[in-house]
Image 1: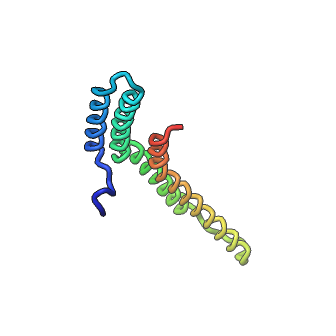
Image 2 (image 1 turned 90 degrees about the vertical axis):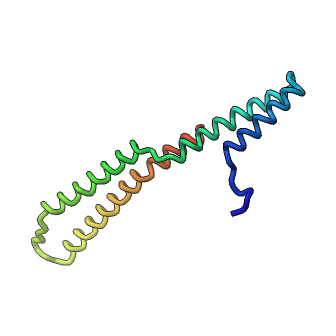
Length: 130
């Protein structure tokens, strides 16, 4: 990784504040000074947002894990209490049962994937508010 591939938010904030102060000393009533003030505020807010987004949201993760475990345990309990009886034991009954089983497994997988992606979606909405 090269030296200029990453931005250090603290250093960036420091440099923006230095430039803001220099512009303010030389052109206190100009629009450029207002732009520098706005840029300093924006830089500070962006650093705070990036810091927040970099940390895991344990509340959302706990809810996600709890719901995923409930889905998995509920499915296991349902399958353990389920008796497979094929009345006429023909191939059509077996195929229908397997199709239903595969559909259930796919939908459970989709539900768990949705739960796992909630934290990312929440953070993305916080990073880019409309």
